[in-house]
Length: 231
Image (cartoon, rainbow, N blue to C red; front, side):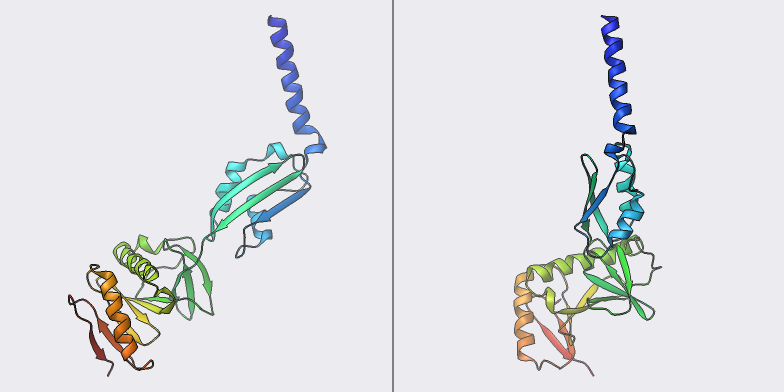
């Protein structure tokens, strides 16, 4: 019985060594999918994978950890395809808003994570954010109440079909966030009660005003929409 066990162990060890040493399992192809913002070259180089490396020697946990440090990468799946292919399946974060940083803008995702610095901005701007910009950092680390207020309002706007019309958000010194519709109407929502009714009032007021007329619509008084034009 002991001899049989010994022989089996030797065979297992020999099989493992064969898998690790034979060139048949060396990596020849690397596939990357799901990426748009992060280049395939960056993904491959950051992971540390190399052509010619044995497919069974890969430390997949370490590779995923390295890749998730890239600001845009949310989730990573690494798949060995025997005998010589490794596939990376990437899920990227999506920017939804920007903050100003000098003459540039920094994109953020829905969790407040800084993703990318750009010169040309095509996202709504969250004004009033004063923090050190570091890609991968979260704006909520320095402004937790402000970001939670922004996120609630952002979701409410999406749910009520107004998300695409918002051109900017404004955070005041107390962390309360207002928003600007169509680039001309600043909206103060107030308490987040009767939201559906408030948005119906908002659309009615906007529809009655000239599109280019700038002003503020205050919905913080229950049952009223108070408009004051900019001076």
